[in-house]
Image (cartoon, rainbow, N blue to C red; front, side):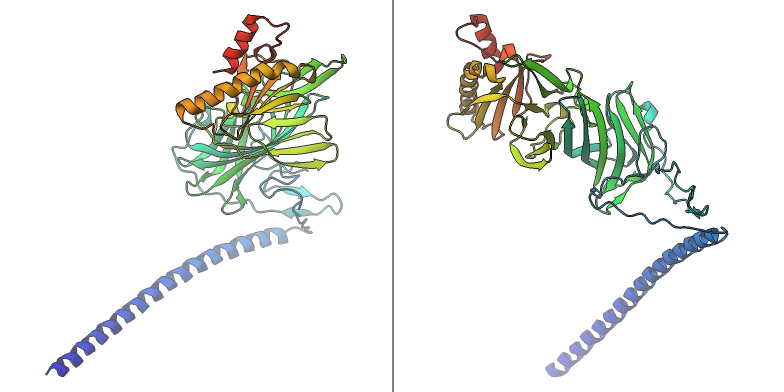
Length: 437
């Protein structure tokens, strides 16, 4: 009896298993058919577009095709020459022959023409941001994550050029990218979908000097689940005392010397490079600055030097990536200054005070004061200093008493230098007050 019940149970179980297997097979077959149908629909659309392009080309008496070869020496996230984007053009690309996308380019050698089909872009949803309604604060749809800044200042001419690459994330869908730029010539702008390694089509670019905004309108919305990078080249000048600028001093031999310094607080980073120049929009910075090759000049920034690359007459100095911080705290100095140094007691933090060579002996009091105050605060709050080094620099031309750039604090000379033989007690107190807190 028991054996008969066991056999019957096994038979029922096998029957149910066979039924379930058949049902699963049918479902998978249906899904596979749907996928094949979708794929076939896509292929049909591609064939239709191809046929349309072919038929359009065949109506011409003679056609010629000019292949485009990528420059192997150019990063893939930057546009190629002849496919640049400049503010105010209203188009996403401008060819070197001045032909807009989808147009016909005459061939000067053969007189023939080549026709390119206009690209198809998705329909934009309603409710997207209006560039004209943005006044002073940046929209909240985007948040910067990382900056890569390359800066090449010219100490002789006062000109500078550079590139910036900004990785950002989306807080809401948008087809509008808004960042700050002032007194810059911004060009070669591109937006890269990092996951697909494809550029996003740009509809228009407007550099509004009155609002100090760079407004980039796209032909499609950006997806929240994808990573994007904005890349741009820029030209600037170093004639002001804010942003990045040239400062001059006279050395012990009576020779005029030039250095490069920065002053980004409160809203002057936008005069050095395009950026999201609001304090709440913190990001990590990797900064590269070009200096004259040789031992005459060196470069300082927020973090220690990570690498140096000599390229003929210039040396590109790249610094370690910073902690997340506001744009106004980024800084760099290109100078021939000398320094005194020490290590903060009880730590491995390197502390240096820089000044022109003829005045470096006047930095000892500031060095002792800074080292003592740092050790006291670390012990009092039981919180270590977050960076591996701290540099204090006396700048000959400086509009503020000091600027608390993280890892690279810049000072007016009278707020950092003290000579025991000639300086007054008021000057000594001033140095202690500015350096100490």
